[in-house]
Image 1: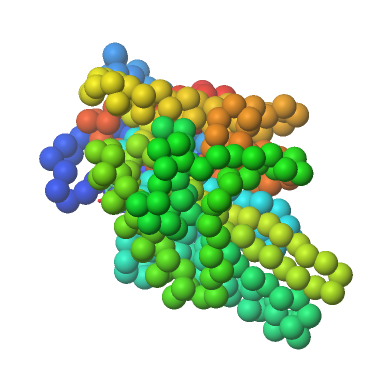
Image 2: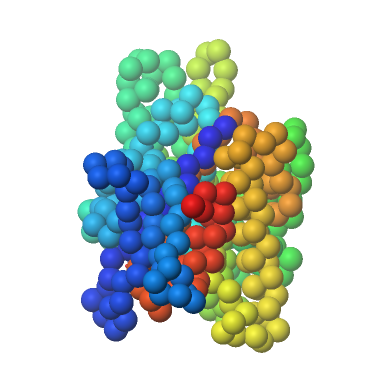
Length: 333
Ligand code: ADP
Ligand code: MG
């Protein structure tokens, strides 16, 4: 079981009025890899906090570099039967969706399309190298967790029930009852499905008068390898988390309070799980939230990568600090 916690600082956007950059990537020594994030104290500008990560990616980091460094190395394990879980964590507007989904242009594609592309490439290679002795199939599920309820993103929002999909335990695993799963043959298949289901997400959140930044979106890629000897199944999950900002500060309607409580609790449990895994604890509190329960986080030797997205600007100061505190609490220096 392993976990990496890395930070990615996004660049300043052209339209941004605030140009006051206060978050910096740093190394412990010249020539050493970048592993530190430095940020001033909000009370005393001269004082500085430093947070340590497994790796820190600065404003210049390309989508390709992030994928090559943090995701590609785990593909081998995925095809050996281990589960891989990738999270984008952070305040709304810091680059979670950019990191996970990315833009339409090839160079701007995020972790998810790159992951699928690599999975298909590897699947074809395995089939070829084994002369068809190993058959590999890929199936997708895509769902969101909003107010602690699970909704299928592969289904039209019309089919949603207020309670969402129920969970059931079987063979020591948690299943989402009725969650769809679609076979996917190639990148074209995937892209069509992904674009359609992201539209479902937008439609659904508009109907609820909510915003997609208030739900967790979870894409699950199931890889099944079949040989004469048996079946090997593993999953890669990529999660674009709800915004980690404290929603209560800006908006205190009743509906928003319910949302905030659900978001805060699930992000809190997630960070507890990440901490427990990184300490090597036997007991991981993954049952304490719906998302970590469905993901079986930290069970069965899986690999987890948490990417903390950061905006470098002063206008995000307090939210940035609290996200740093949550995701690297054990490692604040
Ligand atoms: P979030 O999903 O965390 O709310 P987004 O991914 O929507 O944030 O990013 C906010 C804005 O910043 C978007 O316009 C996005 O294109 C841009 N952005 C984020 N990260 C980067 C990056 N690494 N390079 C260029 N633009 C980025
Ligand atoms: Mg987003």
